[in-house]
Length: 55
Image 1 (cartoon, rainbow, N blue to C red):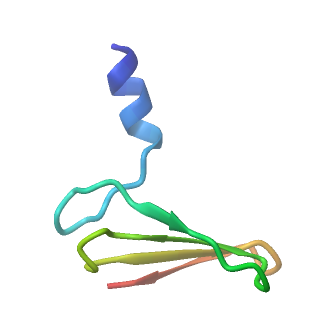
Image 2: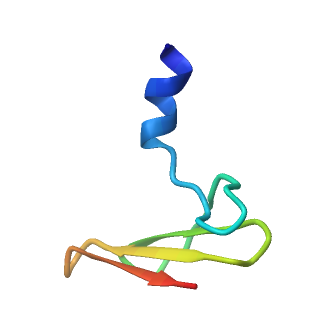
């Protein structure tokens, strides 16, 4: 039951269903998560409040 609840909050790649890995960029005010296999990239910009997806 607990694993099912946690899985709702994990972000995964829509292609291979691997968990996204966080990358840090010091100069930017954004969070970047990427697929370990390079299929998908998700940027969340705090200043504009919009997620940007790259497939």
